[in-house]
Length: 400
Length: 158
Image 1: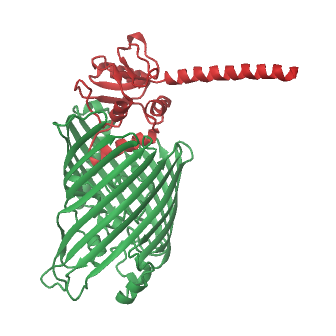
Image 2: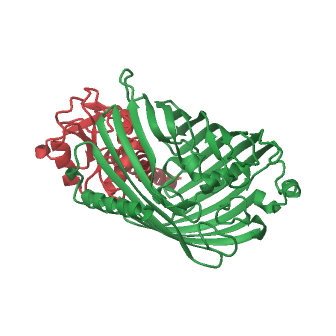
Image 3: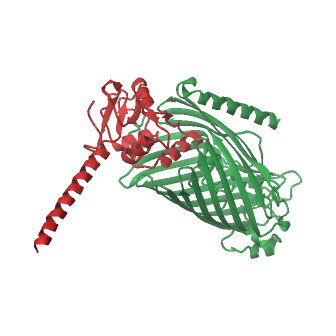
């Protein structure tokens, strides 16, 4: 079933690519089609990441997607994107709609050269930090993997896009361009990785999200040579227990702040982001005591363009699940889970080579202390994980 | 004393020459990339903010409410690089990031890419609402050269 759907998507992608190569003129006026594909090879010294990677090479990470957009007039655009993603045990490759946006610039307000605003309606890509909205396309990421501290791939579906309504706009100020987006959304909390992140493991019942809020303000001084952003998220959800569930119908509050900064020079880009999030789980009954933790994360990253084709990446990425229990000892004493599952310090280096605008080849090495962002599904037994581990990845990516 | 006097005159002459060269270079640089539009577009000037907003695909209409159709050369084309630096003051990869965000978040569309300056001139001449750039415009090219709000920066002759 899934295989047939993936095949269909691949055929669609190829046809669309062929159509684009034949010239954009073959498409109706105002219609654009784009697509992307990537395949990675991943190996680890210990632990599993996106498949059975321990002392093996796994092909468990594949991304395939296509989108179509229709610009009806300068004020109105419709668009949809379908994506199939395989990521070890965390994502099985079943195609899904990643965004279906109705982008609508208000007619009553003049979209002038210095200010614009409008409304998005549909399944909207979340404005979270600097990379979230385009993270499904390998080309837009600084490396094969985004810094897992802030762009946790385990909960990608929860963070990437959500059905809702958002207002957006931008204004040219003397200091630089200021843009903003605020939305009311219902995040996708259905998958077991998201459940694991909030409730420690895959539970019999399901987490249902309630009305949640996300907003970002981005200031770009010096024509975007500098970028400064502040993101705020406030998510509310409730648990729907199964008949024979040990958990009660509890509530989850998740709040996060992200501070982002970037400097863009001709040949190098320096990026750093800091995030703080608070998970508060209440009223789940005796088997899951009220629990609240404030996590903190940051990374510093530099990319350097060595030649027009080659570029290098270096990054140091740190995350603590509970900033008042950074080494995880208190949590471990209470739960028996290894303390190193509460933090991760990742030192990564990578090289990438671009062939024209459509092809990208990458290699990346990670040396990690801690397992805080390891996928639960790939590592069901935390007791057999290893604190210090290495990971290497290669990836080929295509887009049109 | 005499020696140092001659030396000073010589130095002053050299400096004047360097200054002249720099001025000429500055003028040549300012005139290197021209902003061009379809001749049926009623605008004759374009502010730098409007130009930036149009190439970032944030402003999709001309003041006369015609839809804007933006044409660009490939990211690594020398004229595109010069245009990004001189007219917009951004690097080509930044513009590409802006377009990627629009395309992959479903909130906009990328400009149309053309293969050469000749094709750029042809497409801008024949597409209603077209906006592009060129280094050389011949009398028969049937495009309008737009002037900027920076006096003397962009050619205003049609």
